[in-house]
Picture 1 (cartoon, rainbow, N blue to C red):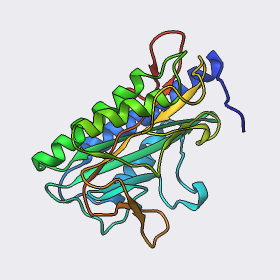
Picture 2: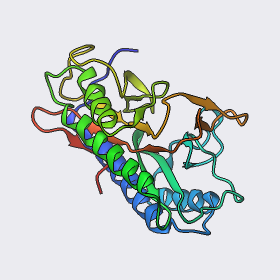
Picture 3: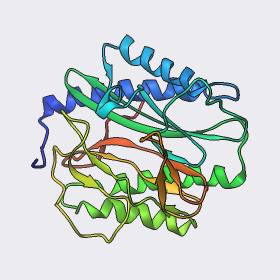
Length: 250
């Protein structure tokens, strides 16, 4: 599949899809507290997106059984919501959500603290979100694709953390995953030149320990190999003639 550039009309529809994702994540963030189950969050996500005339992008995607990915503590990505997965004080929970609106996708993620968290967890959340924005700063016409991941890796590793290698960002548009893949690591000045109309889902996953991961027997949930904490932040970003345009900002 070639890299697909979007028209102004398509970008407008993707912005609407992105706004639905942003609103859903904001509602989820407000619901996160001790005693809430990840199934409760999944239901809230489904209700919010459908009330806005959109569909949850993940539900049924390659057989995924829920609307939301909810990954707790050492879970990196693709945690399946369940009634028995209860949030506890001191946990961190990554909430990854996508919408489909009039045939176009939006995709974003946040990692939220559950009550008061440890200083290490708090630092991880701050650094990972900062790393996302360091990557977005490089999402400009004329830059190389790998400038994004190089900026993310540098910021995360300078803070003493590691960047997951096996799971990466991606192009997005009329499909959830389009070309190109967007690594969160590697040298700058490599890969395709970024052009206006390209839309990328930029999503660093950062761990307190090793970058290595394992997949659990459910076939979806990915965890850190050493049991360390992991955080995940994501935005859908359009390349323009000027500043990067974040389509999933509230």
